[in-house]
Image 1 (tube, rainbow, N blue to C red):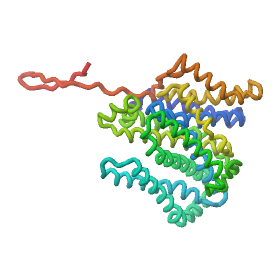
Image 2: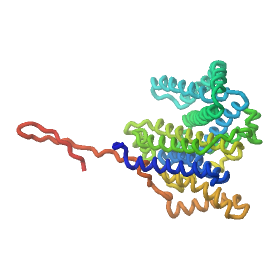
Image 3: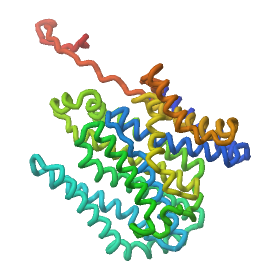
Image 4: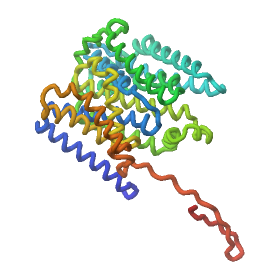
Length: 423
């Protein structure tokens, strides 16, 4: 315990206290379903916004595609649990294990491509796209006949409550993996564009996802999603424990990534992409990694949100909604995890909670007028956001160690090496 920093103990102690208090309020019935939904929604949108902050605030890539990956995670996770309730374990096999096979093939393709110099973007994209198709084909043709009986036997032999939690874990993980794979394939050709063009491309991606969701029962072979009518029959399995664990997982993974040497490379691309390239940083990798990780966060949040609402509709993921995490990131402060977390909860608490109860009916139609006005005022008065660059001590990135200079001196005729901190 002596080696654990005080900031770490304070951070985890505070969040553990928050978990216990909220759990008690829910258990005692002091938080009704409305405020419970607001709390869970705030956690989900904060996770989406944290992913966007990693992409935009820390890496400098302007993106409007978070809601597209949020939708992929939501529908992917919901389809797995829906199938399980209808005695079809194929969703787990294809969604989870198929995604793992795809990731394995990605590793092999990456090793093969690194043997060649100056591979074109088109070649890389086609190679990974073929690997994706092959991976899911293996899952459908090979893994499905082998693993479906195993899952039916093992999971059905367990108590119902345990089976539910296991299936829910696979659903959330599958939704996150599907969002990550989609972002990887999309990011290979698009991240070579400049930041503004990249933002337009990601907005187009969100629109494409929404159109596909409108036609899942016609263009895509997912009749259970019911297209523009909305998907029903999703189990309401999200609880406070799952929300808390997923939220903490996102925070810790993002914090540790930014504190690593890879995180410093990500930040260097934001500061000066050309300079980062000149000192030997793989700029393509430094752009693609935060884009994929941020999209995985969005996919995980989508699975949480889907199993809280127990209903999904494509209209909830249109391109207008994709501005919500962007506004939260700008309000909280670009490059501030603390600002994004607090602003995400406050955003939902005020706009979807308190103001809906206090203001007259019909206010929600004015939100798209209020949002830009408030955003313009914020950009004028405090462009760095409410929290600026402030971070909680546990989340704050440590400064790099100062370089030292070596000095030689003689003591009793023997050479002695001393190090002094460079000023």
